[in-house]
Image: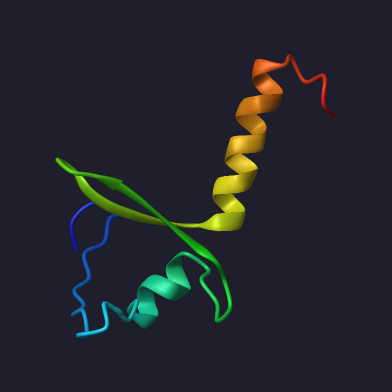
Length: 72
């Protein structure tokens, strides 16, 4: 299937706006029941889904780098 580490999955949205994240996608990205996800949207590029905890760690690293690591 194409480039290593690149995937394509399909899912359908219910009338309540819910989607099911395919099992393989959950396994690849370590998503588990109860995880909080963040949706990032760009009108031209679409929607991205990320684990909130991973995104928070990324944001904290940016702030630490900006402060020169002073908040360790």
